[in-house]
Image (cartoon, rainbow, N blue to C red):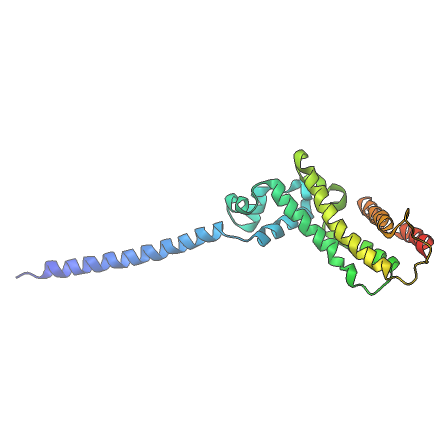
Length: 219
């Protein structure tokens, strides 16, 4: 009986098995690459968004550009942020936390005057990474969502307000008869923070005039 047919068939089957293995490896690698192109993290997206904001500004944030920077499909960005306004809000909040709340003035062992000076200088350095952030950050939102920018600013100013009031209350240099029912610490701190923001928006080099006003008012 001629067995060459069976030998050839065995070789044929072996060839098919090798081909199938190669095909599986190749397509498994392609599948893994494809999956990597669709997976990322919320933090990575915000980081990429902040990098673009530092170069081009908040108003120029673009979902496709951010997706390309992360190496993912645009849909992956939308999975975390359903709209551009949502992404802008998260980016703005992260920048606020970095350049303002990062000052951590509540832990500064100093008086009110020194804390305000430190806060301004810390935020001023932050604007070097995000030019004109304080003056244009609300323009990154659509006209119907500008209130979101103000809400974020109000949130962080609320935290700063509480920290500064605590420092002011513990400042032994403050004159005893400065504050009363018509001019309390809350009103004064609101005034100071509003002026700090205005100086940052105007890109002032220092806050010396504001510091002098503080000295003449409470010390």
